[in-house]
Amino acid sequence: MVFVRNIGFDWFSYTLFFALGGFMIAVGLFYRSSGRSERISMTLMATGMLVLFTIVLLIFGYLLLPLWREPIDPFLVQIDTWFGYSWPNIVEFSGRHPFFNELTRYAYLSSIPQMALLFIILGFAGKQKELHVFILSITASGLVTLGFWALFPAFGTSVLYDISGTIEQAARPLVGSSYGAELLRLGAEGPKFISPKDMGGLVAFPSYHTIMAILAIYSARTTRRLFPILFVINLFVLPGVLIHGGHHLIDVFGGFLTACCTIYVARNVVTGKEIQADGVFVATEHQTTFVHSPSGMSGLHR
Image (tube, rainbow, N blue to C red):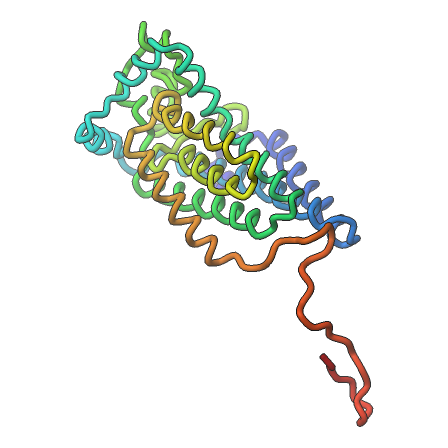
């Protein structure tokens, strides 16, 4: 699509990302094939695959620009008004409460580091099934989110409201008026050059930060010490999605529903037991060995 669309592309930067993902997978395969450590192997391979998947998905999102139809943001705002929600009002409220504003900002920014932390903890703890459910939930929800956005694009509240001035200066939302203006330009003209340095969030509905928050809480439930910490942090991610992510209120509900559905599917797809020790999977009930039958033919004896 990059070649067909004739769009400028930062090959050098993306090659580094692809090389990083490929290197992690290669090292993981080495640890697996050598029998050194299955925990290290699956952690490295999972992280490497996530890096590659994320980069490709982000690039693909930008290649879907310009939009083929008008964004559905006016409709989403109308739904928000039924609940009495107003983005300028909540940003103004946050600006009047600096501690709360900064708490939600850093909680919002912690979503991706949380994903990386959970990959490491689940992998090195030998929680293979939980890690695989986590991976599948991330990838499936990412594809569902981008697929829905491709059909019914929405950029968020920043493309409809101009809060530049005292409100924006006080709250300093990560997705503000200037960001909204750039989204509108991208939606109308499309990107002229794609680079990881310039990439930002495109999708409003469903909110992927909400999806990550729910997945983090769910996946951390098996780690007794980490769970309460991530639970509290992600409680502040949700208002951060609204204030600093420039999302509609309905985006959060959409993200919650998407996360729950993908977790349910992933838990029914992923099977297998947890790893009991490094490099050792749970043994089968019976050992199988090759022996010679009376007729001279090789057979299986249990």
